[in-house]
Amino acid sequence: MTTPGKTTPSTFVPADLDGARWESLEPLYRSLIGRDLACSGCLEQLLLDRSELDSTASEAHTNLYVRMTCHTLDEQAKSAYLRFVQQVEPHLKQVGFELDRKIVGSPHGADLDHGRYEVLLRDLSAEVEIFRERNIPLQTEDTTLDQKYDETCGKMTVDFDGEQRTLPQMARYLEETDRSTRRRAWEGIWERRYRDGETLDVIFDRMIELRTQIARNAGFGNYRDYMFKRRLRFDYTPADCEAFHRGAEEVCVPLLRQLNRSRAEALGIDPLRPWDLAVDPLGRPPLRPFDGTDELVEKTSRLFHRMDPSLGEMFDTLRTGDCLDLESRNGKAPGGYQAHRDRSLKPFIFMNAAGVHRDLDTMVHEAGHAFHSILCHHEPLLHYRHSPIEFAEVASMTMELFGFPFLDEFYDEAQAARARRKRLEDLATMLPWIATIDAFQHWLYTHPDHGRDERAAYWLELDDRFGPAVSWVDLEHYHRMNWQRQGHLFGVPFYYIEYGIAQLGALQMWLQYTHCPAAAIENYKTALALGGSRPLPELFAAAGLEFSFGPGSMRRLMDEVQKELESLPL
Image 1 (cartoon, rainbow, N blue to C red):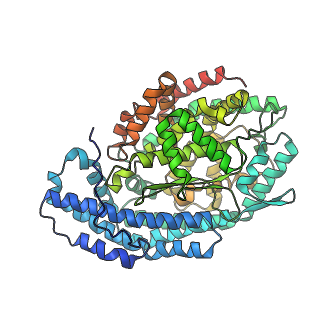
Image 2 (cartoon, rainbow, N blue to C red; image 1 turned 135 degrees about the horizontal axis):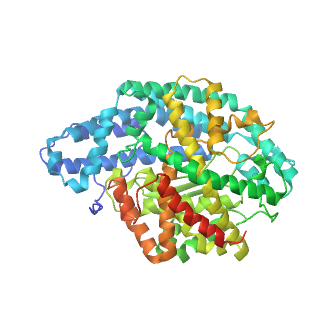
Image 3 (cartoon, rainbow, N blue to C red; image 1 turned 180 degrees about the vertical axis):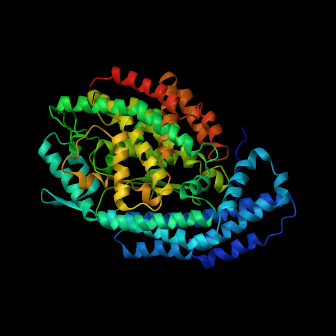
């Protein structure tokens, strides 16, 4: 296994360079493009200097994106972000291609350490292969449309019981034991979504057009095949994704629907309705793990310090320096993410906490991404400080499972057992949902001329195949647009199967942990420190995991999950 490189001092890029302005970046990029490469050492220095410059531009983009998603109604924040997207990113894509081509075409590449640079050169070769200058304005428009999606969703609020609440804040009412309250909350959420359904359809229709043209410009028959190359999926194919879909259908859907039937029986209702899925089936009060985000941060810190002192220390570095924006509020984009500031090497965690158990899962999940970023700080090549998403999500999902023994920081013993059970039962929902979203995307982009009714019909067909045993009678107008709540479809197309692949990896890590916690944590940290410097199967192997996600692998892991569920109280 190749060891990542040593950190080198920043010497090429001035410390005060404004990475948000093309006028500041261009002279340095042009100097790299014009640099004479007389030997392999010259090529290596180019790679290091480029990494430093790319990190500067990347951090500027990240800071603008963070500000925009935290304040979608702030016109100045929106304008600054769009200015970067429209006036800086196109130039960065063009000079990035020119540098990729220069590096890949250098005869001195053959003299570089193969073990150290093989992944980088492989990836750059793929980027050169698919780059088309005429796609830059199309990609810019696509990104601008995603900002409109975030802005539209960020404005969604519901007047409920005399107060205006965001959709994440409404989630806590779906856990209430009073069924009429749950129904009112659910209908309020979905009626609000429905009001903007046409707007989101218009955005998505245009995205389909743009993405299809991008693929055709690059010489691909469809956007799916283009994105497999663009996402650098060298280690699996669409057929492998279909194997994952079959596994979810054969292994997880029967368990999901059995859990649905048990829930309906426990609640004494028939049929189960969409507003019955989050409430405790035994009528116990909702899990409320914290009161306010300060308490969430303090308790999460204690959890990580008990899990592993070094992880606790890493988490505590996030408590200062503008690294957290956690509470839900009007005008904030939906969802949660971790973003890394690539030059200052400071992670940032964004979420919409509303005091529900899922917020705790999100906190430890995004902290796992932050640990990944921190463990790669020693790596001088930006390309290797970001791992493939299929493994990056192992870093985050593993933390949700490693946290099981420490949930007493948030709950009493009975509540902690409920939380563990909920997390494991959620796998029966999560893996089929991932299969649904992935299969939907395969169909969308291999049938780019579809209409909205066809899109909705196929979505409902997939729900019949993968969905829970829930009645949508008299709610069909909401059911057909249920896909719109998955922001990945808009902002990061074809980024979703990674969650499924990673979840199976995280389950393997959890099984390691149940046998030997110290060894599992050491494997975790060792693999994360590699960043993206090795091919995907080798990253899995470094953590002691198999890179396999078909029906057989899924069944073996879910059998272990079912055994654990049988040992937990209801």
